[in-house]
Image 1: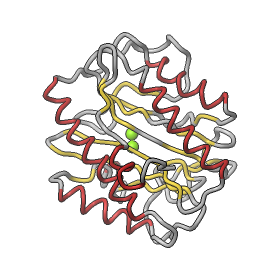
Image 2: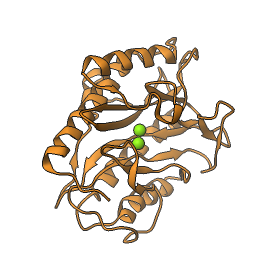
Image 3: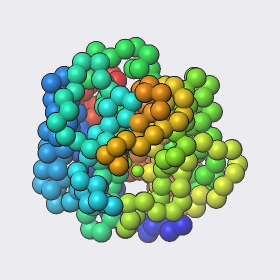
Image 4: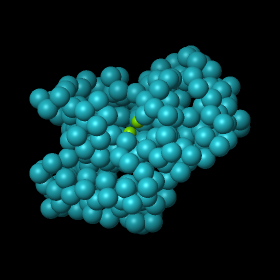
Length: 259
Ligand code: MG
Ligand code: MG
């Protein structure tokens, strides 16, 4: 596990703010009738105008700036000609790179009027992320973050995706340690101050099982029920996590009830 200097954390914060603002730019456009490729185009333009480059494009061959995952798609959806319709949910995952460091953040948006049960899935998944953030404190362990997510969402009848996890972030998009969304309290590596990580619960309304689609990227639920995904970047610090990315810009665009 790499520890970041205060200067490096500020560079990571700049990247985190760029992805946070990009998500808000995308939020402006999310409505029934919009093509997912349109969202991708706007995101790429915005990131480049900020002097950064898209963090996902070309990463292991991924073809786009955003991962756009609709309804039963969990993560890694490829933007394209698909048109969002009323009642969809759409997870937007965004990465960027500037000054040699990465940003990475995700938010799942409702499209028009969404079924109340699905809306609840989104709200609770976001809540689980904020519960996990409280555990990103020096001296706690990875399992404290993991169990904060798992215990909360399972108590609500949801399930935690096992195959995909949060991660360290720095000069690489994904680095040590893995931050699973399931695990035992008090287990795993001890978190040092200055560790920078992405916490990203991926929570299914139905069973936990996922499958990979024919395109080689998109991960969707095996039972085709909806899945939600929220992600923030944080620096572990003493007493309280320093949350580097933010949903504040999304809230400015969509108003206080973003879901
Ligand atoms: Mg991400
Ligand atoms: Mg991530």
